[in-house]
Length: 214
Image 1 (cartoon, rainbow, N blue to C red):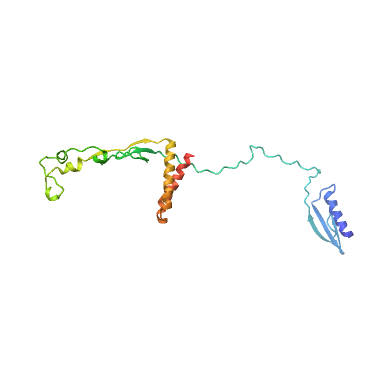
Image 2 (cartoon, one colour; image 1 turned 135 degrees about the horizontal axis):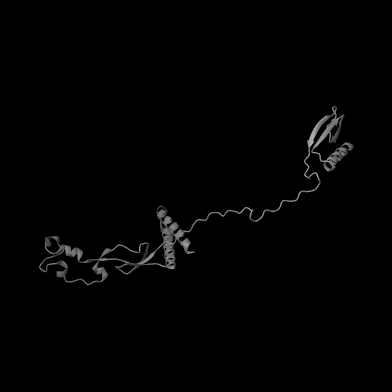
């Protein structure tokens, strides 16, 4: 018991003494252990113990470092965001043959041939349509061998037409995109799994385009 008290007292003396000591010598001889600041005698078994003294030599505690200024603080870099796709340019068009409206990405559709009857234009007489009034034109091929103006039959009943288009406003474009997206989702629900690939791709494209509407 006295040996343990002596050892603790020696350590306390070393740690709190007026002089700083970084090395303590443990001396063992005759079953007794002592701790001292000087090396052990030759007749003693010696072990060295390294002590870390956190206090400076003058006994004053070093001041805490100042907090870094705001300019020196590490600023977290925001994660890159995916840029929104631009709103597509869309046109509202009216079909020349039946006046039905539709949307298109092309504001200048190509002209096409349409029957005069579809356009509501009254045709002329049979002689005006088929050429020579004396020509015998019938539906049976054997009655129409080289007689009558067959070219007039093929061309006079058709006329070149072109659909009329105008550019949609941003609000109208978003409305058209949403309607197309809803229709595509209905097609996906009603389609076979093997046929959903192109529809899923179209739905993803429309979803990206609708991001610019929010």
